[in-house]
Length: 107
Image (tube, rainbow, N blue to C red; front, side):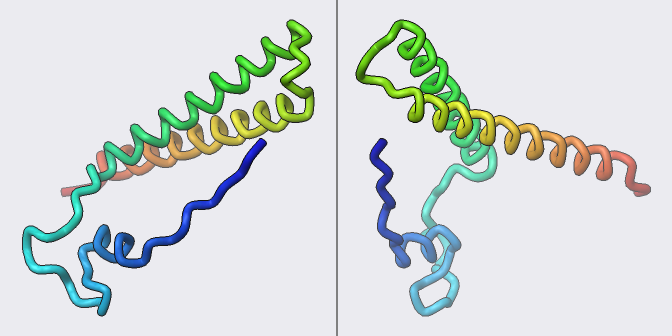
């Protein structure tokens, strides 16, 4: 399994935060559009789903005795899928709790 890290682009990171590289806010209309919370959540859920689908496919290949798929890689993929799912459930629980807290606030 090949693991590669993307290089950190400081200029892009501060632009996403709405800042110049010197830390000053960008002029109105120059901020990078990132799609917001909904887009980030959608991408995260899609990633968890893709990881799960990959683990299921690798399990199927191991069961069919495919010599190109090792049991070790399959177990690692299954653990990644499990951790991703557990994290997703925790995020969901926190969002539901935050929603309940907001709805129960006195106005």
